[in-house]
Amino acid sequence: MSESTFEVVRRVLVDGLSADENAVSLETSLADDLGADSLDAAELIMSLEDEFSIEIAPAQAEGFKTVQDIVSYIDSVKA
Image 1: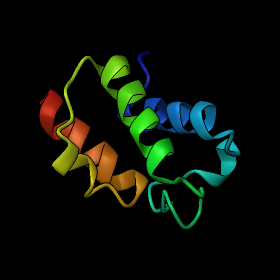
Image 2: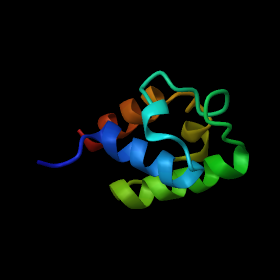
Image 3: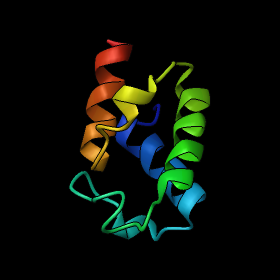
């Protein structure tokens, strides 16, 4: 069984931010809950682009506030 989009995004966040896997849910705020700053965000976007073989425009990435925002965007692009 392949990983869901959420599971892959969570793995990227856990690896990239040294976050606790159990602390990452769809409602998790990237900045408030995970402490991601702009440099972290840029690195995460690159990791997500590699992981999903997609391009994420900087303007789109600026709208990512929660894990759900990322998952919804990736699902819409991959559909």
